[in-house]
Length: 630
Image 1: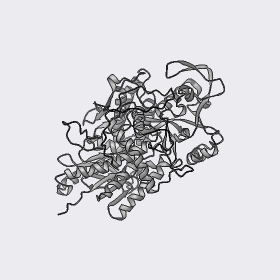
Image 2: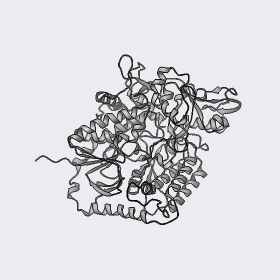
Image 3: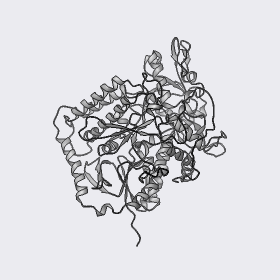
Image 4: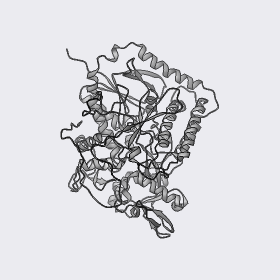
């Protein structure tokens, strides 16, 4: 008798979700693909600059080992190293895969895929498609998934939002509750494994580079159902975005990768401290001062994002911001036309929203919330540990619930190298696509063997919460609460952090949580009700805001995207560990614990970007039989 293959639900239609869906369908599994928007409009489409892979087509002696070294170092040694090594070893094959799919990579005159530099590295290892790389990768994967959709192996549910994970009596995932965001009707979807690929949480901060549906609510819902949330305090701030009243629009790192320069007008009466602790003058008064190039002569404008964001803030706090505001120049006016052409789409974005042509007038930019380092805690099998219970890579602590892409915490640590995001999303999706079949084979029964009450009870809980929201009759406005929450987070929990302010922020978030109980929806229609959708999401956004802020309060050190001036040193003795947040029903705050970081390949070293050097690093304990997921 041929065993019937079990069903899988994938929530999220970006790069991670599509890569996982493709991999599962290749193996004959039926996938229900749920997306809050049209798949081709998923947030991955907004990624501009490129995808990293050490293919070494520029003759620089680059290698996946050096890529892994840069990634581990760039993350300030706060990510488990074996998964990073495997990701970097797989990266060249991922580029080959997209090339076979017909992805429109930029080419050299010889016809080879072109590669550019990105932050935190001395090598040209970033493949790109003009300045719309995410879009082209997403479209390539979508075409592959459509092939399996035609064959009946993939069924799409676009404009549906994940509301709840359905767990059976043994706490094994057996499906989800979803909501149609047009009709607001909720229903059950059944499966024997669930994959969450819902992206980051930029909309908790509201003023970010993220799309409006990157609320983090899916992870918040899972967190309140018992999922561990890791490294919440690490929020990546991108150095260059267009300041705006409605949101902040990304100006890709590819601009600096192609030679864009950051500057302000100098003031010789002011001084700033270099990374070596030396005080220097802030340029010559009235003339352009290229401060990143002076402070970090080895790497200049391509410092890692956490460093770039901090230095721009420091310069602006000295009163050197352009026009007296919190902004600096990002200048491409002296860039050759052929290089400007490579950046055409991103330069057009600046011109559209500022009214100025960046080819002629230097851009005005400032750091913005961009990427989520923290996310769902996911496992990877430590096969060399005989006491470890068998688990599955990319699976959360909730059995049968996997988490991939930007919504998990793996691969980046305390800071993400530019152009590693698209790589980690695709890679984690492929890994889950390999691990899920292994997991499904271990199940002794499927969702069809469960009583109907398992699914009916979950649906009833979500319908009851929906009814409660519509019936609330207080005096608080959900949009006002969101604005107040985001304002305090941007002010106190982004680039620079202060313990007293963090304590105040935690208490303020708790007050927001109480005020939320007293909201009244200003729109009570039953169709396409955006106010209700935000109100439903907001409960879970608030809980993740507490996770982020409490994790930041407790971590008294300077590491990656976590910057406390009163603790100016990285403290490996006390803080070489990952933050794990757990939700406890009835508790006022998250329960915080810590987990060791696996540093088997590279012992922590200082992140020094002041001296120009290319190294051929040695990683310890590298196995010679790594099985890649592609």
